[in-house]
Image 1 (cartoon, one colour):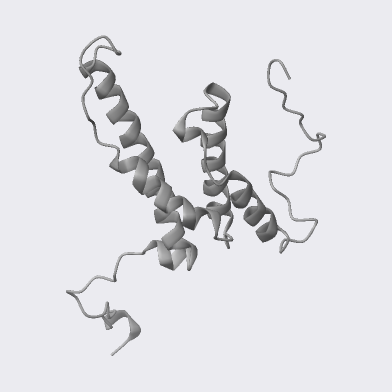
Image 2: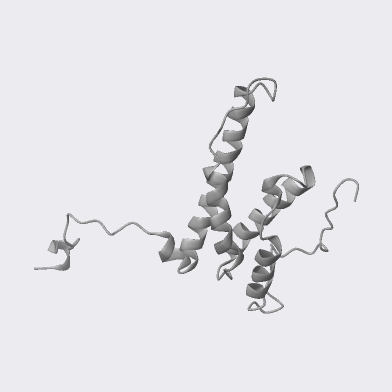
Length: 156
């Protein structure tokens, strides 16, 4: 028998490896990433509910009707978790900051709106605390020869 006659062994067939999960990649941050996604979905559902109510009431011209505010209540419950968790991955830090941006955008549009309120300071504080574990030379973008870019917004 020579090496040319040997059939390579491929292993048992039948059971594929289990699919990768968020926990495989992000460890303890996985459940909080799910909470971030759930918060966004609930926020979108509440916006949809308000839009449907506007049509149903003719933008206040017709008889008012009750509509589902459950997503708003569920969002408020999730915000307790968002405010109290220090991210361990860059992905979760980004997602938490995106939630802050979403809340701040509503504050800019309508400071009195119920969705203009949220645990912004607590989230930012926890993200900053998590970033303290990075060394001061860790890059946050591609290395270039150009100086840092200053981004300004109109009117500021």
